[in-house]
Length: 350
Image 1 (spheres, rainbow, N blue to C red):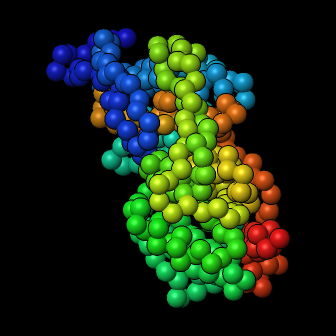
Image 2: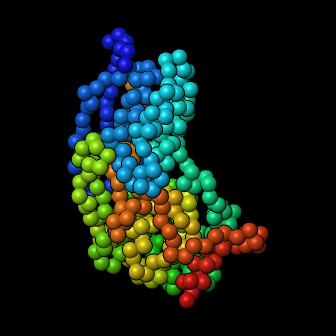
């Protein structure tokens, strides 16, 4: 690689080791490191820096090689020839974004002042199976609000909770009030469709209200070296019952392809509860805890660094299959009915 003057060089911090979206409820031992290599702030230098960050720290290479034949070295060869010293900033951003797109990971993003490269195929290529107009019909105008939760009792004595983002927090008091109000109901619907995730501690806190005993809900691993297969042994994660009010009656969790990241993890936790059924469409996935790092030109890359698995040690990176696959039908929409909600109501009424 051709070297420029020292004034044009900058230290490349390989990994910042700061959480981006999640805050895990279990502690993770992490050690920060600075890469010994320095990369020029040139198109070629930024390309090499980005490829190496992913090569040494991305966590799903083996899994995705098995699932669809991903070969990161071949990706390097494919995109290296597209980078040259005469390309514009916009052209470089497009090439680097396309390279990251090969990972098919919604937690992998490249951020610059002018754009945000992302892969949203986990939801964009599928039916929405959700309508905010229908949601308003079921909630009405007199629904209750507790922090990020909206809730009411439907006319067949089924409780309904709409939670649109795990980024919206709540307190233990909020959950106590919600469950106390819905206690008269014979069943409960938790609608997390199109919930793109957020704070994992919110997923833990909500799921613990449906946990009656210590329950194995997940496994996680951590990188122990720079090789694609260098990981620690799987570490079990157990969910403990809340010491506050808990729900013992049947529950339906409603999902679609827009359920991602912490919402995907919540779905996995709830599937471990015997009184819970998941209804709707396959979730979008997102089972890697994301971290961030910077390129020589200041662009930020986010990537999956810590893989998480379900209680059966299976990867849920590409989503979770519901217990009942139900699609929103056009005929029902025209009649003002939500097919997925109505299916859950019938299921709970039994």
